[in-house]
Image (cartoon, rainbow, N blue to C red; front, side, top):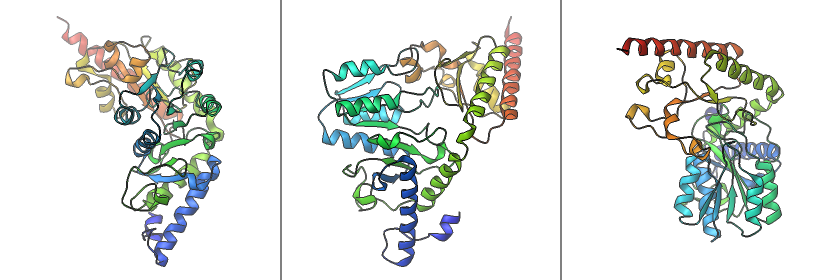
Length: 357
């Protein structure tokens, strides 16, 4: 709101109002670049990670005839972009039951061929499992292969160290408390535009910049940087919740348990119940907005590509739940969620009993 009042002009306009807006964008770009440890000219503003990811894949397809190598658990916008721009020339790097990409498998394949790029997300959006992106970044540098990292789930939750050495990095504001519809891409100055028709962003992204969104995004990330000292405490809240959940519902399985994961994300397989009594419906009525990968309500359960890559069968689709917290989430909030799950389980059990002949 402050930015809307202070910088109402178009940053591309030659008048003083426009110049002030352009200056504000420049300062925001420099601040973000300093956190990343990169040149400010490598930062461009976009509408979010989806646009940034599409732009990256489209550019790499335009400058190389090689294959696209991306992990099998990438966000759907990355996989869809690869199918569009690298049709019949892509390899989905497996992750196995751990949900973690195998660095040595990539190294072995690199010894025999060079792809157009390797794309691996920093942290998975469904399970929260962290990927060895730093090792893969260095591996790509060794073999002179462009490295692309979708960091939408990482940035604003974990330190930014190391991203400046990646060729391409994407992120979006709403994952760390900024507004929806704004993001950025860290990319080389030679990156080809996805959106054309204007000279904004050094000719790499046409369209009037979202000044208020950009400034709010950088302000939100600045705020998140001050909380990084709390990481151990935040991780403890997640671990305590998982232990208490498994004790309350012995049939629960925590996805990625034993692997390094984001402190704010818990993905689980809930105990088997009648599909008509979905956990998500019960919890929603109790005031908890949780996510699920199931299309159970339509009568056709679908397994997410992430769980499929981890070796799960279709039958578990209706049991998957994801709980996501934020820096504002307290221990009391986690406790309330656990109590809500207990209540939902009791209601499901009571309904099942009534239906039994």
